[in-house]
Every structure is written in structure tokens, then in C-alpha cells.
Image (tube, rainbow, N blue to C red; front, side, top):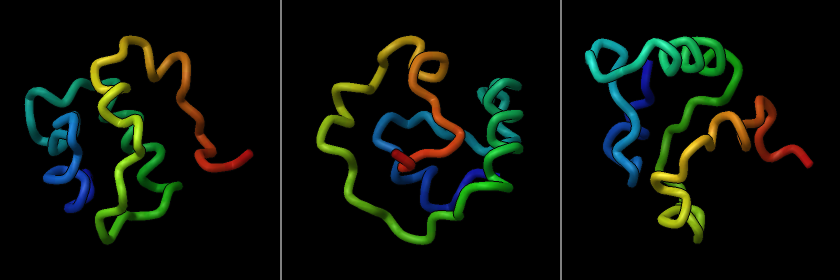
Length: 72
């Protein structure tokens, strides 16, 4: 279910097709839930200025994930 835009554009190369063995079950479950709720990306946007600083930071999901991004 990965967006056609996300796979080639993710600078951290963190997005895998659902059929790829490298796609861990926890990410597949998260993708299944939020892909149905969040808008589908249709074009590439400007990466955040600090994107490279966040690449490889441990525990990002547990510490910073929000089910309602860009709200407050």
C-alpha cells in the first residue's frame, strides 16, 4: 500500500512495498491503519529542513509519532 510517491522519494529509504520481506509486520500494521485515514500523497513536497538530522534516530515512533500530524 505504499504510495507511489513515497517509495522513490523517501530520503531515508525507509519505505518498502508491502510484499517486500524487509517490511516488518509492525510497519505493515501501522501502514494499514493510517493509510486508510491519512491523505494519499500525489506529488513530492519540500523535505523538512532537519530531515537529515532525524535519519537513523532511534525510538522515533515511540517518542514522536502522532496519529494527527500537523495538528497543534
